[in-house]
Amino acid sequence: MRGLSRYLPFCGGGCCCGDGAGRAGGVADGLVWDVALKAHASGDYSIAVAQANEALEDQAQVVAAPAATLVGVFDGHGGPEAARFVNRRLFSHIQAFAAENGGLSAEVFQKAFGATEEEFIGLVQKSWPSQPRIVSVGSCCLVGAVDIENGTLYVANLGDSRAVLGRRRGKGRRVVAERLSQDHNVADEGVRREVAEMHPDDSHIVLNSHGVWRIKGIIQVSRSIGDVYLKKPDICRGNPVLQQSICPFPLRRPVMTAVPSITTRELRPGDRFIIFASDGLWEQLSDDAAVDVVASSPRKGVAMRLVRAAQLEAARKKEVKYDKIRTIEKGQRRHFHDDITVVVLFLDKCRGAARSGPEDIDGTYAPVDVFSCSPAAGGDHEDPTKPVLRR
Image (cartoon, rainbow, N blue to C red; front, top):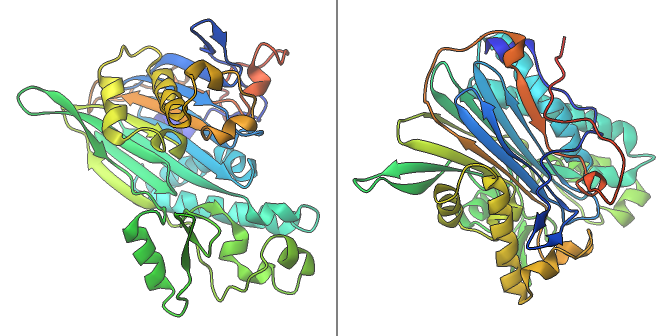
């Protein structure tokens, strides 16, 4: 953790540019962005984003330090504010707790998620009188960390973004999928059972409406940062504005948490790569299909290949041509697919001595809003792949 504890790339929120692979088949797409390939301490990584919502609700970053590589994918809902907040603050808390505890651990991630949640709740409590909607804004959070020196992988998760490992198995050395994270989505029977057991006096805690399971008929994920009105019911009680517009139902107790599920795994020689992605990808592709795309493709631009594979599947489901989706404006595109964020992290070595020196610190921030980065939007933007050292 030597490099990470001393330096951390920081983005103020306006930087957004990359390799910009927004053209295929002669059709320009101003709502996609990517960095085709960059190096980290134990291999390469590729990152890509496709915007569908009016305001991009996905945020992402990669921090490549000498002793550790961190990946974050943050999928907002109800608006972009929570995901943007998490993108600014969570890695700083991981850095601080890792320095305090002498390195990465499951406890470090649990503390960092808790501190980020507390900070966001504090922001909401100050802001809601002038911005009532902020009480209903939240974000799924997926973080992966590769501890280079110890050859250990950590995955911490809230919500339904997902991390999937591609590893070689058997004599044919076929690459197979291994899911590393747990989906906290009540579409899963086990999650529904978990939520119901926490609320034995509420037989309607999870409801099915038009084939979709939701907590109180409102939200599908059971864990997040934010969604304060579902975690602190008192914030709505006694306030007619909030009760009428945001939470017109009584809650006896919180119905969501910000406690992450954490996986710790020793890296093995057969481990090839990890796909970290928001549910915009997994709504369209299975774990096996995504791993097959990466395993059969060149590294450069592979994250964008996954984005395109998801868009192709979305087009197939809607019975339209792929090029049609690429011409649909933000906001309207949400009718075809969600925001999609993908990071593919290749693992070329499981363990090694950490390098030292600030010149080895690097990082990439995905754009705060893809549309504003497109050539049509104009303007000059800071390069998010250039780290700013935190002193």
